[in-house]
Length: 282
Image (cartoon, rainbow, N blue to C red):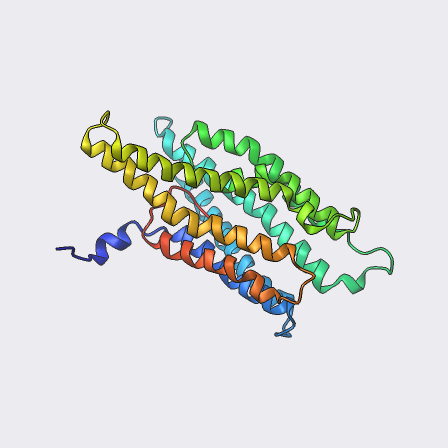
């Protein structure tokens, strides 16, 4: 008989991922409604969830710095110093993200203030993300050496070409179609889909393998099945569907409909991280 224990369920509550997914979900819903013209409030209200998320990170970093300075750990407490450095790195990353969000807000809300013929270029708006993508390569190496998660750093590092293409397309410096602009993202998502299929094939092979003891075989099979049925529906499939819909931006489909798969992805991720322990900050 299976017994549901709320204590065990919330003991592994990944608060940072839940807050991040909730903020992204709210932002995406408001942003699509704003682009469709269904709401008339300012872009400041649209970007408020992202600023709130960054504010939480900055407040946490300030509290952590004050605590570290008031009572610094001894030289033998290496893990505490590593965690402190990871916190500073996370705060620095969110500083770049906050700068990017603020520049996008200025571009969308106050573009009329710039002189005619001299608008704020999207390449300038994307500069914080360009810098973050380059910085993420070193952060990913540091995180790997110190056994820290680096999902977001890996995402930024491999998508630097995609960011450049989007910035050039928005500035109309290239006349490519959006299907061509999104080629780097097509490649990344295709590799992710291949990884999911590999996990599925691996689970089938492990079921029939006799080289592992039953306990280890079951553990590998469960891990492969979970990656197949949760990672694929949660991230890969919604991202692929969203990308297909975005490439059809000239169709009559509304932005709200285009953003539905991504909203579903963040909703599933939010629910999944409620019972998933995290090792890092936002």
